Image 1 (cartoon, rainbow, N blue to C red):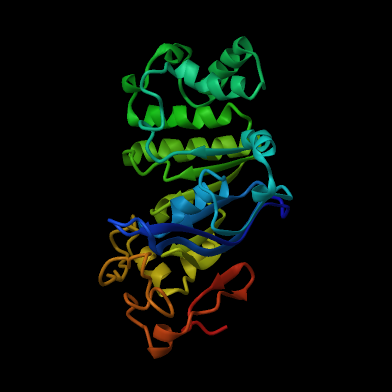
Image 2: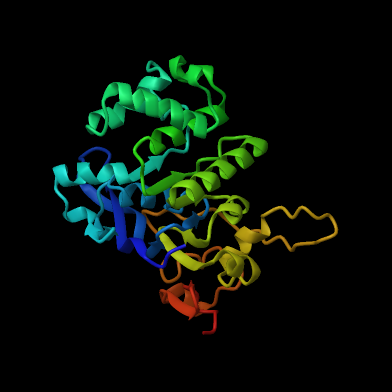
Length: 324
């Protein structure tokens, strides 16, 4: 893995306006992503984890400009993505691909798989239709499917096969960077393992870089080199995988890890049950956003936003209770 940074995100924010139900004027914002910063090195798998509603998917979509930012910077291979015009962004898109969570709704039910695979590469002028279909057959084989699947429709496939098709569609563009948004959450556990192995094989063969979004820490443990933990629009902890699993520092990270099943009946893990639900991002708590659910919160947590600071190496955390 190279130390060369392929993607840099600085203070990224994405707010959705809340409007009055009758008069239509703006009354507030849903702060889905509220000042996120991280770098991803070329060739690494970077995990982004957290509960549903923490802003993970919105972060991934805003990075690739599937959603427009509110503020902040996103730099890919040295280029500021939000300074590119429509034509320049279109030229950049083949190198950055997105794999969606739902492998069924992300495919056109009226389009044969072969046509779905060749559509983008032909539209971008990267190959003729004949060349694209030949490439599609090769990519399908790499992703564990067969030639005859080209003529089938999405409803004729299982969930695992549809996710393989979603991966194949991304691979058709020969990308360098892939955002995978919960790509195994809708699949059975046995199929999850196959898809994770496919991601690993493709990364090794093609020197891919991943932003892997998931709510399941046991999944990112197998695939990711570094992991960022996200809560209510903010990153609360970043560390190398082994460091995070052996020495979690933020109370939220500890709670997430306590929910990961241990495949050893003789080992006991203390389960940390968080009280309440994740707060409303349109009206987040003051101070540390996690203080309303944190079992260790003190008065300072309720009033002062914790600084996100390094605790040594690649490990950084935003918590008043952690000593540097």
